[in-house]
Image 1 (cartoon, rainbow, N blue to C red):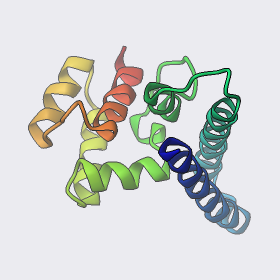
Image 2: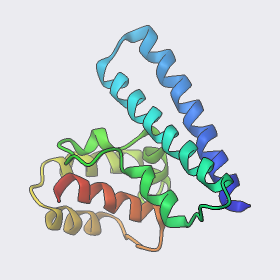
Image 3: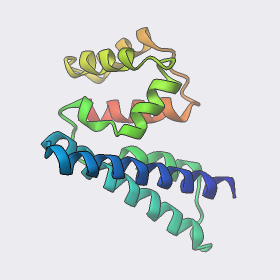
Image 4: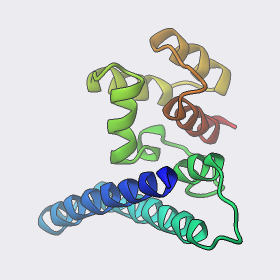
Length: 150
């Protein structure tokens, strides 16, 4: 039951994020915001698909199935780490990994975009924040790093 409630909360946040993005895009017509809105729609669809599977009792659902889709938007290698992080994840990473310091997250993203390998990125991020791999936000951040470099 708790997993369903978490999914509903994620979907609610996705809807709120998308409302803000669509409103801003309609006023400013910013291509970068359009891309963020597209990623937000994909993320919302993934959350809805997971909820749909959860309601079909013949398909078991585990925590891994929720954590994975939240960051896997395609099978392609990410070329720009900053564009791989949704607005919701940005808030979550800021809160859970960077002690509420958004500037610290922004600085880390810029640094990671300039690195050349996953090992370099992991060494850097471990020097900046303490990654507890049992933390879902840390696991999602690492998955994004893998998509950027591997």
